[in-house]
Image 1 (cartoon, rainbow, N blue to C red):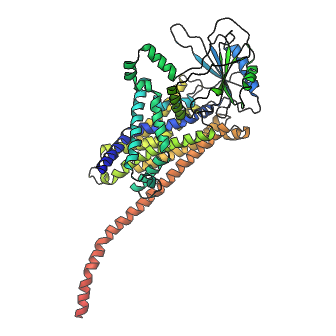
Image 2: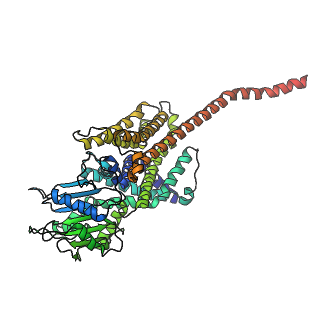
Image 3: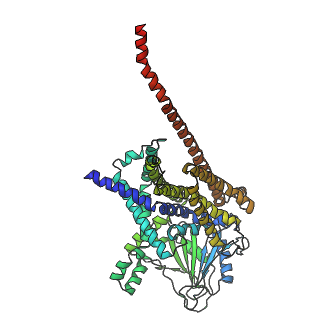
Length: 548
């Protein structure tokens, strides 16, 4: 009974992984890049100035306030995003009053030059946020359709992880087993190791991803059990907002935000100011919310301090009101996004995300490797289904990273005044991916693998060179200015190119080794009749010797 159950789970695990494997690979890879979406955006906006050292927080707040007083008059609120380890430029944002018939006004965000206080003219780009949004919006589809597709795939991914644990009797033994250069057993061991090494992350990231759109997936339940007012109240409990006062339309002189910040710092033992939200600016009800880097996975009220912008007094009890359910939901949300994480934890998230991508890729390759000997023996060649899976594997596992590199090339090479430039950055990426999906149809599988690995090497190693030819934010300048985010991005591109070069080299050597083994096997088969004939003559020769 146990064996039958485990066998059924094995069948389910195999076919679930195959049906949605390519979409899951796309989701995991683009989602992993999302952990560095701010750093990617920084690289894709080379007009931003290099990092300027030794500028106090108070000076930055004064620069931001001067700009906002001049350009954001009449706005409902201001946002000041201070330089941090991820995005080392000063940014400001504000939302204009809503137009008639609309719920919210248009939101604008600007990057400021800290030396001059002027805005930085940046190129139109989707940046890292566009890549991040792709992993759950799927870009070209409407949000309603994409959310359901992503939810369906995530649910199957969760079931695949659970069944993967069930079918492995010796899951920890499998973790320490690795049979390199053993064909099918080798790929099985790779898949097992990649699955086990980040198993808690796979559970967490998949389950928490399903909670993101719980009101979409549980719409029938919420509609049956709540009316419109109850539904609205439930959403407020799960997604609470910071309590703030609205404008009274009575003008009032505000204190300098830098002075208000001094008041806020009297409460904090250590100050790591992340951003400032100004509500009802230049109004009697004006107040500023100072937020430092998050210190808790769920929510820490001590990370926020509200100060009256007119009197300078600290306002108490103006924090978000979280229920227990909201705290749990926010905890999963924070775990999924890695909002609380510092640089080290963010790299851990990134690498475990890549391990998840590699786990999915190895599972897809394992499916074709297991069936290849039987398929190659068929007189008419492999079945259409097998060839399709193999081509999709090549075009996705290697083709998608190449397409993402083409997204970066488009950022550097498309004309700056091009209409719909942001859309065309993404279009270049998906057109490239489509070509790389079609290409394996016209090449033998082994050659398609090798050629796309070579192409991936070239495009990633070439990106820092194109960056140097088109901007002044190249590697040497970044290192000289100690702008580690820009330098780190170029170095990462070179590292990725080196990894693809190593993969191409190993693939080539394995193919040569296989051909040599096949040649030896053919030679053995060719020489075998001669050996059999010689062995059959031995008794006759012995008889002749005896007669003599």
